[in-house]
Length: 73
Image (cartoon, rainbow, N blue to C red; front, side):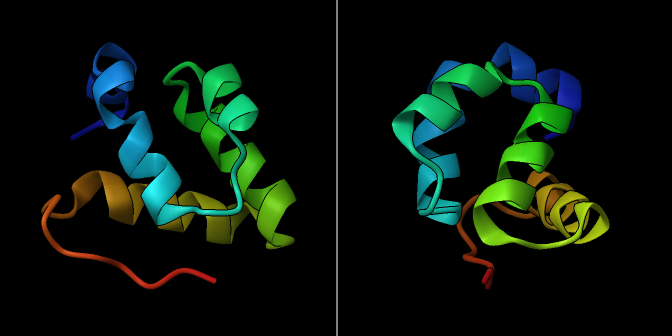
């Protein structure tokens, strides 16, 4: 999945986003609306990590097999 696919399939994947980054609220996820950079920003805020770390996590999540869990803070 890439950033364009994320935007197009946001309603289908937002539950997976909440599974991956459990500190994100439903409001956070709703406000992101499939925008990868907004997702990075929300993760950065909620987890207190650097923007590059948040971006790295999102990139890894977008590129991984949906069936494999990843480790996040």
